[in-house]
Image (tube, rainbow, N blue to C red; front, side, top):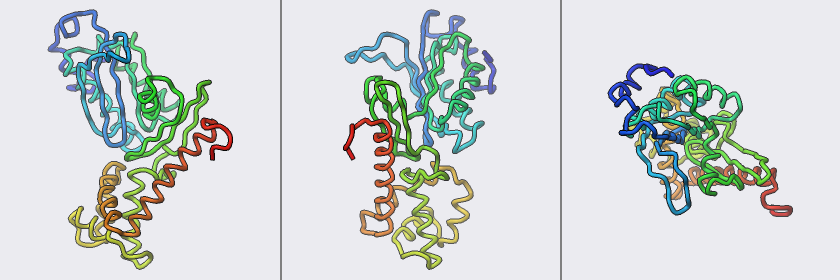
Length: 289
């Protein structure tokens, strides 16, 4: 375990008592992380029996930015994950020596190679006896709605989108979740990207006029659609683009046909993702669709 990894991130540990903080050396902690394309949350909890009527206390909670390596790159994603874990431990008054398990549910974990890279990195941060669980964030979302039993289908629709499903006999399937370049048009990024595209098309004369032009230019304090090019490519991160979704919704509510079409297509994309997973796993039986 490297106590000085990333310099000041773990400096707080030097100020803790010799037993690792908290007033007792036998404390056993778990760090749980939900990492998305917009934000990452880490909670620090004791490892104690869980019952439906009694949840373990949360010692600390920390929030940071994007930890999806497909959006911000592997280096930035790892720095965010390490920062949020260190902050949660610092707030709780414990060091890494008290950690017995780390569970990461992170968007962008799409293949065993993604899992292995994170596992290798975690083993360089924590003691050798720590257990690690690394999954896509959709797995945690499903488990949170089923009290830990992985059975059914879950849909995440935020900055990114993914549909994930499990059967009782352990089969699994997913749809979407491959990022905007590969067609996640049911996502917040997809909505905003289509809106920006519609503005440029209208400006060129290749598409219909739309209230999106005035509304988004006003939101971004720009004077011409030409300026959208520079604004977009100055920082094309998914979360930044997706912040325009409320503007698209407002235009749709005001009766703009282009905005309404974008949202309709988004709903259809989300429904098709769920349908694909459910059909592949047979979750609704024959003849359900």
